[in-house]
Length: 313
Image (cartoon, rainbow, N blue to C red; front, side, top):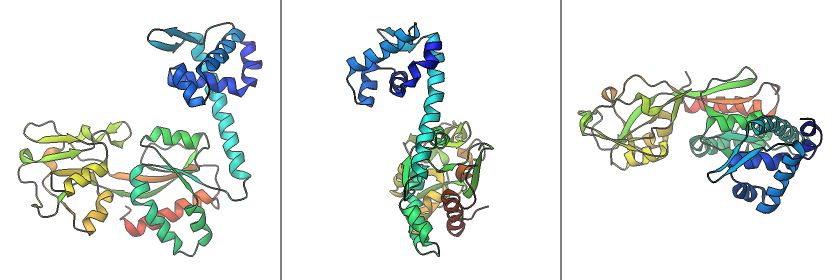
């Protein structure tokens, strides 16, 4: 392993080539990702294997898989890549004349909350903070663990994410929490009289809390129809169109409630196995950031904004 610790990883490109192949499980896909030819990539990986004296990957008709020794190489290489990427990102952030924040979040927040927050902040007594927020880049991902990886690798300064088990090395600010509720389009009865007669539009794979998805709270009873959709937005719009009912966090329905496109329903307890935990949204940044840092100031401003818009409990 001496060659591994000395010669191979001095060339960071070779490290990235090997990691890209492992990530995509394909030389052709990795070559596209790296914007290089497949033969050149194959030669580079083969050179690394020759230098190490063993194969990193097994090539089979079913694709490629890391060897036992290759797994150790990949684990060590991933750690190096994380450190290097974090250092580069941190250097760029701290050595630019106008620092730009990168904020990791999900579609609902980016679509429904962030634009309104920017308008609210523009009218505040903090014009410098309004400019920082307006110049920020939003990185959108539906997967919490991917967003957390962005913070870990310093590729994001601040996360706006649903409640998770937050680590001790982060600062977290509860922005708001609202219940899950059943909604339907305006003009229907406000109570679910017979659960067996409804069509429920459900984003069943939505993470409600750590390790649990929304579908786990839905009773598997015969008689009513469940239509799986790909987002809370889809469920909400289908219900607002009068095609059925939806089960979504209340904060995602505020605009439709105010415009009377949706109404809240009662009588939906029969459709649930147990009460669904509150939908909680946090602003999260590194514990290393001081109270006067841009990300902490943005997090605190978001909390003030949300306190006006939502009932933070």
